[in-house]
Amino acid sequence: MINSKSTVLTTLLLLILTTFLAAQEKHHYQTDFSPEDFNKRRTQIFTTIGNNAFALIQGSAGVPGFSVYRQSNTFYYLCGLETAHAYLLLNGKHKTSTLYLPHRDEGREKGEGKVLSAEDAELVKKLTGVDEVRGLEFLSSDIVSTGLIKPPGLLLYTPLSPAEIGNDSRDEILYAQARTASDPWDAQPSREAKFTQKIKERFPQVEIRDLSPILDAMRLIKSPKEIDLIRKATQIAGLGIIEAMKSTKPGIYEYQLDAAAKYIYYLNGARGDGYASIIGGGTNAYFGHYFHKKDVLNDGDLVLMDYAPDYRYYTSDVTRIWPVNGKFNKAQTALYEFIVAYRDALFKYIKPGVTSNEVLNNAAADMKKYIVGKKFVKPSHLKAVQDGLVFRGHFQHPVGMAVHDVSRVRGVELKPGMVFTIDPMIWLRDEQLYIRIEDVAVVTETGVENMSAFVPSSISDVEKTIKGKGLTDFRPATVLPLKE
Image (cartoon, rainbow, N blue to C red; front, side, top):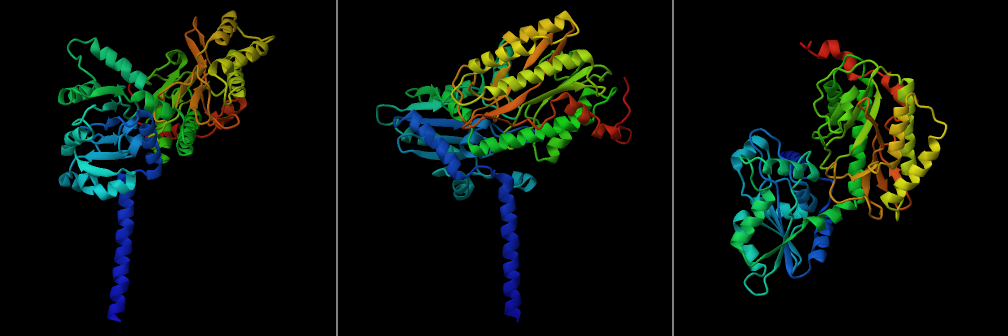
């Protein structure tokens, strides 16, 4: 009897321990991609760089203070590991992959929980599918052993483009680097430049080549699992915008719509912003990347919202514009209906094998017919619409791990798995007004899917949504009075 109870107790304890360890594993490693998924991506690199080359990818650095660590998109894309100061070496000759990790910091783990380290080699190999896991101190000697001892020396591929971390996109990082370079007191090389310089100093015989174009081409075509993550990010983004619509009324502030969307994001498991929200009422919307969100929303104005979450290293890009008072006036109706019709015309022509130019040309031809006989309240409004027929930016940018994702979709043949935004827009320059909506398109085998089609866009659906109860209806109980 005692032995039986002991056996049951032992089994129960083992079950609890197993459950605990499984839960902990979810905390310190992703569950969206399998080791086979990462092996497939690394194999693509081996195929591209050839036998006389290796690739070295630097993970993101640690974060200061109480900031939450996030891995760079490139490093995560190739192994899913969220350990700071990690390196991935891909040996083209032997087709092997090795992760180099810092050693365990027991004090840190006591405070933060498990952090995968060199001491977890067997577990890391199981989770990521890499062949070897070693301490950082072995990286230099292993680079030598890849083929530097015997001529000819190997080619070394490493990303030269800036790493995207958090809500960064490469284009914005490059602009920031350019602005920093113009400041003589703050100018300094990028992290990528310093990394390649260290490689050249230690191994001058190595010929360095840029891995970024290879990675960009891979990331342009999304796998079904990636598309599922982008779809979920789009669903969360859309729900955030719907909540913001329901929370809109004259007298609230732009930042309160941001708060309404953020609540939806965190409620659905997002870790934060895919990019800083663009929320502009009235003439603030005229600025394409208006981030200040300080102003009150006024009766009679439109408010534009462009926002999406950071969901498991993927994001989206959805925009809607709606009347603060819940009802489009005559002028707003004519312009807004044009934008929605343009969106529909663009989606009509998206399919595999065509280019962005063909889509734009065909949609513009349809819209020229659309405006025949249409009434606008001002000649300047008609002029804005006519200018929109020749503007080429309605077909925008890739979306994926970054909101302005790497590679390009303009001027190339569309293929299944490409994800990008359709973003029809017009400017009313004399009134400093801007009207647009934005949806996320994924090219399928037979055509296209609008991932954000569920987000209200028709005038009737938008006005109906605004009538709903939103978070700001509880303002007296939850928001402190503000002093202007």
